Amino acid sequence: MNRTGLLVAVVVALAAAGCVGFLLGDNPARFEASTATIDNDTAMSHGYELNRTEDWTFDRNVTVENRTRRVIVTSRAAKYGREIDFGALGSQRAAVVGVLSTPGVSVAGEVINPVRFRGNADLATRATSGYESLEITGNATDETTITTLGTNTTVSTLPGRATFDGVAVDVLVHVTKVPHGDDYLVAAAVHPERVEDRAAVLDMFRNIRHGGDGG
Image 1 (spheres, rainbow, N blue to C red):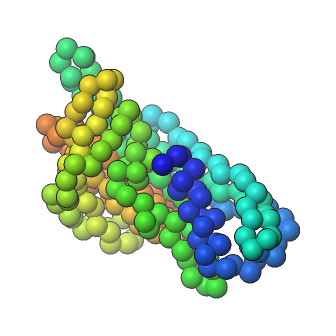
Image 2: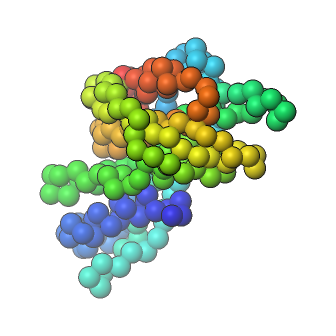
């Protein structure tokens, strides 16, 4: 799936719901997520640093029922990493954590979740990057309930296989989804299976910041 797939889901949600405002509006329909990050002190306490932030913008003319309208959707991601010793390969930033914020769509007072049907591998890849490829290889080995941004959410831990610098690595993938304000957030982490980082990941997930609010 290409990078715009998650953003297209917002448009599909509008079309499927038959949103009158979308069909009849003349100006561009704009949906923009607020930035979500991990509390800096929490990330640093576990050896993680902010690698970069990214904005993904979907800007396209969309036709629904013979009506065409320009749609602009902006999602945002903050991505963190820490170095892992890979022996002969040296130290590599192979433990990665990210938070993706994508705008929800309100139709007739109901908020539609644009990430509801996205798979864990897809969501983890979008939220974290860092690996050349990522595949989920089995069912969840653990599910833990945490509270973040005032909401209880389940963090799923799954086994995976990833490629880093041309080398295949067995990894653990941690992922959760949580609504907050007008957005939907995906928090994900990927690290080598041999590295015990689950407690750190859960702590960082508990300390997400979004739109000026803390956890």
